[in-house]
Length: 250
Image (cartoon, rainbow, N blue to C red; front, side, top):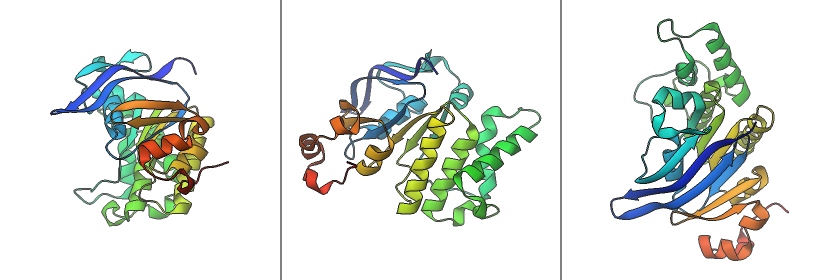
């Protein structure tokens, strides 16, 4: 794949008098696998919201697949970009497979509804994420970790060239954290999907993502492989902890 999947130029976001993103310039090529890291409130989730079009910047330009985001409809964005939020509450009874099926809405015929191809995509996503044992259950009754996996399956069913994830492992136990990361590697390497994930676990980010982007106070302060981005002095400065306490792959 060629070209940029995502490009931000001079993007600023303000929450009242606070600058959440400060003149951010960023290009992510199609087919890359990138982790956004940084302390709480650094601007990571804000960056995802800007890219997904759910938050408008006060200044700057965003492009998806070399097209200006501002000119795309919500449905056009949804065919280009899947988003996995942190596990959210569901307002009414919904079976797991119905939640996963929501990912097919951008592809459905508006008059005929789901097609056979949509059902195949839903079944494939459920199998790919490994949640077949949850089929038929009310998604409201699931644990937060199980619900997070359902949301990942929904995004997989959406079948977009770009996937954004906001702390996808936050509610998962260690086994499911590793399984989720391996799934993202597979979607990226085997299917060419561009994957951008906000992660707090520096070890997972360093092990599973070739490119790390470190954000601090709304600015990108480091961008590259883990060996460069997670230098001991930078861990101490940004996260305020002893680098010896952070376990990173050798």
